[in-house]
Length: 315
Image (cartoon, rainbow, N blue to C red; front, side, top):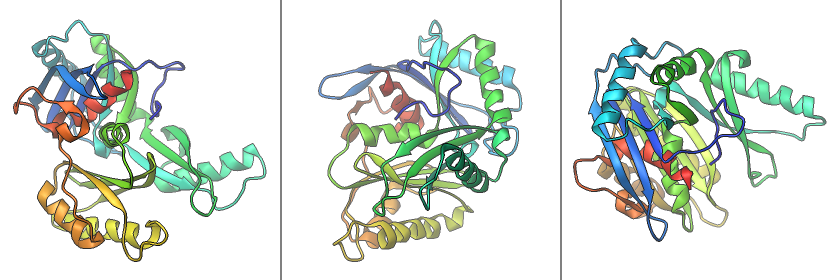
């Protein structure tokens, strides 16, 4: 996956990365192993005050950037990474929005294409284009031959908050992505036959991503109350099963891989819902299934999957 939210013209991808989420901050330094595996060379995770990072797409995220900078400095020092100056950054899930934009017809000119994309992006994100930092990647055409784009957006003022923290530390960033795209690197690096599903839960809902042939097929972020999580996840799966399952598979899917991250639902319950809905028999993937060697149970795959996924882009 290329750099989607970056202000650098020629970005580089470091093997060190930061992960931020409400209540948790992590740093990792990944090392490439044999046979497409990876291992944590250094890492640390802190539980932080929930008021320190308040993920939101529309509202300010950081109560005190200087305090967060001090936390990250202490975190890097505890991992032996204080001398590192180049980092990737995984943003909290609720801070960004991701859309798959499908073009209904063939644009007659570049200006017409941009006009239609702008309208769809502003409608999908609920914000004017000049308020957003946007990056887009062209995807494979859909089965009807229509052009599709993966679009990632974050408000410029919110992105500036996180950049100010790194500026205080004199750290440079070459790659900034939402959490689910960091986590998704593991599915894309270790792909296989069939479709893959990433369920990334956060305090206010979840992001569900279906990959087919190594490319995003469906990306949907759902905001919901905790007691609505399972019903909304079920609706997401029905949409996939009934409207985008491969031809020739009646009322079913060919889901072969399932990755569940974050909060809101247990891995076991997510597997049950997937299997009940699609007729599959899947179990959730763990770190070792995806080629990541964790040194001990001290590290939770949930807390480091996103930054570690970004770090794999260094090779």
